[in-house]
Length: 446
Image (tube, rainbow, N blue to C red; front, top):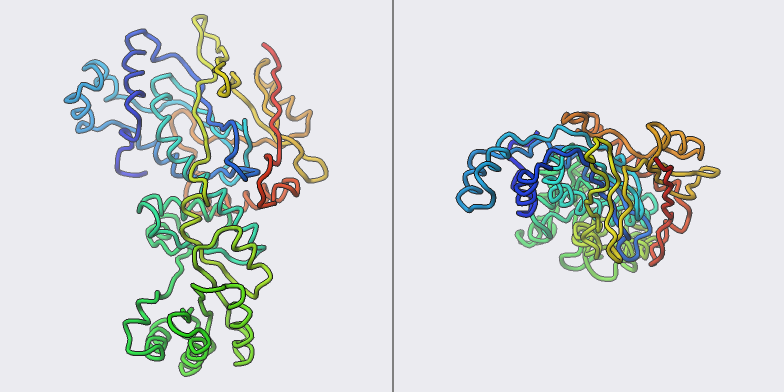
């Protein structure tokens, strides 16, 4: 559990709504909020759920401290009686959602938050902050690992974004199949494999390339990766192989970070083979995205290091998720569906149960069901043969611990590979297109 309170990771209007709801006597009404998107960002044919463990930490730490309450009071954000209410505010409700790593589509109920209005509405901003960032990075990462066709992708974007965003991005990338990160905080916090050896500055520090390579091999062993394009690439390759052999072994890998990577990969592979270094691998970096990785498919590349384009969502830094009230307790104590009717932003009311229908191992549609007596939605999805998509994340205010920790991250990675594999073939295309699946809503009535 994080030590730092997340209670101020919210917009002011969340607190002023609670203030006014306390005045009207509606703050304690039972409500259901839902996270979904109306459309996928351009060119995206599916979304990827990521950030669940971070979200659970954030909800658990959502408690106002005395210092925070004092600050709110000094600025008159809410009335004194509301400050007293906030002092004891804890999320005691339940949260269900798509399992981390699962693919999602427009209309998918990615997260369902159930609790009183006050304790649920105040989570809106922090929930969307986590999910919009992490899901966007995971979607970009998934496209990149798809383009890589099984060759390892390595996350190297820490210096291209906010320091905490870099940690979150590294974890989201692993959900979508990345094999390691250069960010040590991410590696330490989430049990991710750390990767990295040296930059151009290390070579430039030394009087010549030979002494730089010799020093790195002496420190890290001949299995290290040497950056060979600081000066002349062919000469760098020759010196790198020689440095490893002088230490009694074969060089692990060379890294290319500039120039025409496709042409250089062929040239370097030939040179390595001519030198007898057939086991030495080639890693390429240099502002890669999914399209550049796809273009390198025909080249003899063994691994890709990706930075800027990954941590910025490869042009789409948000998953465009929204957080909307879909049901509330009525005056008779029964739940009533509610929904926005505004043009272009219409929502579908009611708590939803979601499933994915498969035929011969491939997904054909997403189905959401509302209404009916308890259990009717489950039976309807069972009748359709739909695979259930939602799992319990928080029960009566307590986190379901299986969704946190290194094992949970590994399961999320495996889940994503399986979820992506069951999608129809068009989902794997990198070109702009419609979502791979449509979401059909079924209302069973009351």
